[in-house]
Length: 181
Image (tube, rainbow, N blue to C red):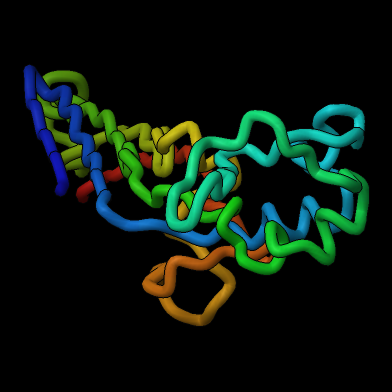
């Protein structure tokens, strides 16, 4: 879903474009790589001592599962983060890929050249400030990155997979002067 606005008042123009995407998930393999190397929040939690895996369950009887509140990870150091099912299934790194983005905001002013400069060779002039990728809101569970970017040659993240090789979007600010002779 997209939202755009364009407001003009006495030569001043404000335009903005925002977008929402939702209903999808993303595997943040960058989280897996951070856990593997021991530099993530997950791998450092509890001082690398035994802990309960967040969101884990225990089968209390055949086919009956209850939230795990007692079973601890036996070895919370490197073997857990590298060799366990938690690491290989990527379940702990799969999050909502929903987001709101403020894609672009532009503020322009049409200089009243005829009023200021009379009848010289400049017919029109405008000055503008603009910004792109100014704001992104995503679910708190996605602590990793922009779900729209990946490390493939495609123009979008249609596969829903990110790695530590991806380049995050850059916030861009610009200024322009336009003269018409």
